[in-house]
Image (cartoon, rainbow, N blue to C red; front, top):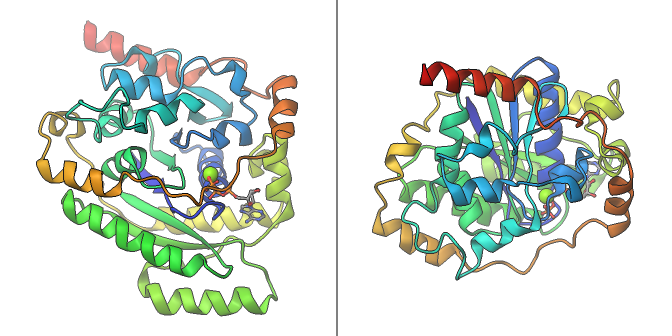
Length: 330
Ligand SMILES: Nc1ncnc2c1ncn2[C@@H]1O[C@H](COP(=O)(O)OP(=O)(O)OP(=O)(O)O)[C@@H](O)[C@H]1O
Ligand SMILES: [Mg+2]
């Protein structure tokens, strides 16, 4: 399983849009794909039509329980569109990062997600993690668990500075935890024919060179509509240019031959290092630039609607997980 974290401290840079639609495009190619919502705003669930009121268990419950959690077999995963498994979250995920949160004294608190993904690794080919717009325990867990980090940069003013900071931060964290994380900078919200967009694209190329993904996600109204409607672009606008942008991104990602770096997440969880605690304390201060959440009306609408294609928690994947468990037991 290749694990990609979609990460940028800057709010509104297209992280969730990238995570949801990249995961959906991979799933539509019959690639077994897991999407993890690691942002307490819960936008992945919203964008895929999973009403927050029906989420009984979130990734926060699994993270609290650790890799031995039974929620992976039953209760956590949803299937919002065919072949795509979603590990949603609720606002309670934010509590995990609180200074006196439940993982405060857990020595493996920054490796919990890696342990959980290890258990799922033989069931999925891809895992996409949507990160919150601040650096803290959740992003630290994502970076611990991932093979590569995709940093969506909105092609507007201020975005470049934020991206430079983000890349430097990820490199610092990767150095500290001695993990090789491939970093890809993805230009998003690119406006065709816009002078500013083109100038910033050129600046992104100059600044990040070979780390820039050789394809972009353009600005498409249909992506906003799809999210408001609770559907991935593969369902809402399957023949659109917006989908083509994500298909090209998926082509490029698949074409890269990344050797999974994440290994032994569960066993290494027992071996915390003091340096990590130092990094954590340096990075723990939440930033104030979080974009406000989607207008409540969107959530109200979604809650009132019957969700599409999410009748059962997770059909096929849950069955495979249970079968594997029984195999192990016998
Ligand atoms: N390529 C795009 N074309 C049109 N609208 C987009 C595009 N990408 C993102 N958006 C819209 O921009 C807004 C912010 O996008 P998104 O929620 O993906 O950003 P984010 O980085 O996840 O934000 P946050 O930091 O709050 O989690 C949303 O309303 C989304 O629908
Ligand atoms: Mg988001």
